Length: 494
Image 1 (tube, rainbow, N blue to C red):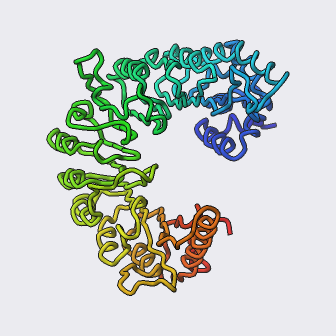
Image 2: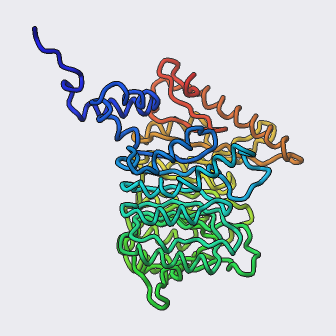
Image 3: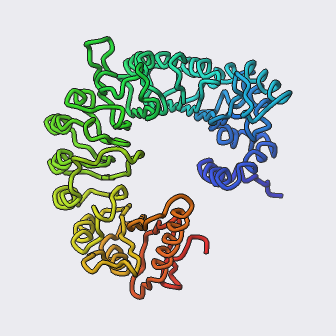
């Protein structure tokens, strides 16, 4: 009788790995159940089961047992966990509040577990590479950060401290040799700046990606400066500017962090820059001059508004892959000094037409950017585009303007289909002048109706001899896919 072989002996290990990856994506509970099927299967799927670990008490009744098991130092987490997430509001506050999710005996039980096992559990993650932590001042965040800093393999740290009182310390200077640092929602008190400077100095040689997004509230506090120069954060010790030779990606809150020519020496290897919530006077024109002189050629730029000097810089070289003009977070940010979008179409797109893959005009209004024939002509020259975001002036019939040169939806979709063969994603934001006396729920209802009408108009466009390869995102987070039988776009899942 021929010997029978199990599937584990028949299929190559890499094929089994692909199968387990699909099981994990579709049904993680089933992947966990496979561990109890046999010793062989357990060995095969254990690494995939525990490669990512999440800690948080809210809606996770097993967290107490999880922490106790991890704290033993002999759990699979110690062997396999590479990614850690501590959920926002997932820990038990040290000081009781009537707003806490847990009260009474349940809270006390969880708090004892947290105090006893949380730090040992974190210290047990010897193979941890990436940690994402959301904390508040009422949680044991100092103990958590210090425990993570002791892990020798930690290379990527993302934290959102959400700490506002100045008396709360932020022990960032305990970290070193990180490749990725992302810190958001923090005040720029002098004590925190000192700790941050030491952290950056201790990771200057290894740092590849840096995200610094200080909060925009509490700026009236006299002990907190309105903004700070990026180069000041790399002066450690004072008077000695640290150069990050491997820093390729920088994301900042442009309302709180300033860029100038003094920042350029730090950014000699920069390829991706994102300036969120940009205040024009915080990005000095000399910054672009210095990048151009140093032949630093960005491959991706996200900011709004784009300034005339930034346009000149972008037009000085070739090879840009992503250009995004995103909306500012706060409406009070000045738009004075912004470049005319036509200058982007006329000066920047022709220089990068062979490499540009992502293009976004999402931050602009319909008065600044119009989907006119000449606008679309400039865009479709970039035949490598994979993602495109446009603003569309979606008029009401009773207020139609005779001289509005906006293309009809049918014409716009046909031209993009014919000329952009690699386009995979098209985002169209319908915008129009807000009627008077529309606010609150009335405004939300009005925009909901406008959005639904816009989606309906897109779905009514018939593609007789064309087959778009891209999806359309329009209206209220609605994704439309092309229906080859009906020859039109339809909502995904319909």
